[in-house]
Image 1 (cartoon, rainbow, N blue to C red):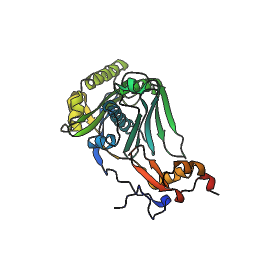
Image 2 (cartoon, rainbow, N blue to C red):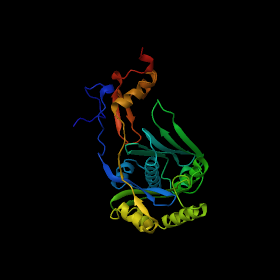
Image 3 (cartoon, helix red, strand yellow):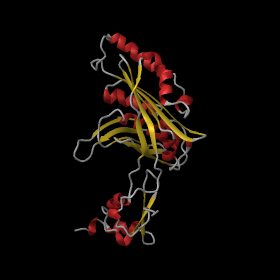
Image 4 (tube, rainbow, N blue to C red):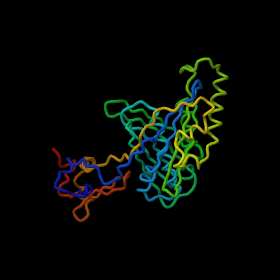
Length: 315
């Protein structure tokens, strides 16, 4: 099979072939659910081997890898709650040792992510990210308005930070529990997300106080879930949800698939290179080749300098 990361006879702008990355799909990556007659809906995200495929391509410390795994699971769970065409992303920028954390998921469930870290950082999200901002963005393409919510990084964990975002930007009560860890089978990552449905959303026959009690009960039960349960490949998503909410009118909806979603190609990167002036392209070249590395899949694409024409060279 042709290595699409290297120059070939096919012109770069025509070469849209997928690079040699895992062709991996997790059929029940996201399991949506709601509690019948109660103001509660949620999603359970289980990345399974997809977590290892995505995290394993990056040379990160254990704690930075764990943070990336949490971000991937969280992004998949939040994206699954939206009706959109395009991509939904989480981005955190701070002054800590992990200066950038990015994960995004398309409406088709294509998931990818990466983190920039210096050294071998350790600790929870607050120590890794430092002071900065957290942004959630829904990008539906150039013909649609882009929605973005930005808040300051607040809280010790990524789950805490997401809760602060919901409280500040969405005026929505939410419960978020995240887990990511290297297991004997490789990296695994999970998210459990509960959202309170507004009283006018069809919760008939319940007073405000009863809705408050129902929400409190659901979040109290959700808080009992153990990390071992969340990351246990032998415990199906429906089984875990049943353990937590079987007495609360649990109704499980159709699961959604998640897949390895890096969308890089020679054609995409060639388009990026064309935006550089000729002098910058000359500086990038080493031994006649320009190397561009995809930050998501960590693959390096090499371009023959004589075949690349920069912005200054275009009519």
